[in-house]
Length: 256
Image (cartoon, rainbow, N blue to C red; front, side, top):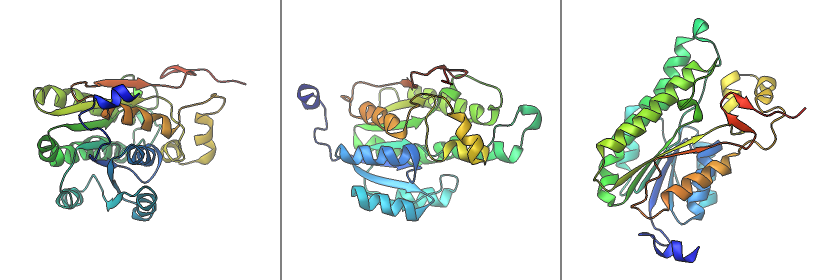
């Protein structure tokens, strides 16, 4: 609404947003949405070919980024003159095994990407976010970071880590001009999330089987954009967003 927009400290914004994991799914949708809302978007991901195509589409800037690699993160930081918003979206689930059959390599990957990679990039960009005078750190969490479920331990443990990271950082930055926002989606149907987790297209399809209108990436991007465009004294600590068909992590209505 016009009255709301005029109250923002950054109308028609020229703010710079860095979005990680931006080559597909929620990251790509978030980059598109923020660009449409007037942000200058820096897109980071490992798949530079996809990233470059998207950057050209939205008028953004593609930077090859592996959040698990310190040198890669340092190169990104060195290439930036300004950062107002960091969207820590890089992450994922890599197995669905019970704890008794845990693949420790999968656990390591889950923590390296979801937790340590997020810490690494947030730490590196905090000076710029503070210097902006109105910075935002967005953590892409999950309802898996709030509730555990069978077969999801490596992912739920990692996303619980992201949740407590957001809570702790918010406490540590109180009084500073940086907001800490956590978006925690439930079931989101994207091209890659379930496939990466199961390694099988048929198994991935069954995750969403019978679910009427699961969330899509654009729904989550809408939440991110709304949170970072509130007047800067308003902090959206935690936004939990699910499809109507999902009442809880373990309670999903499936139509026959």
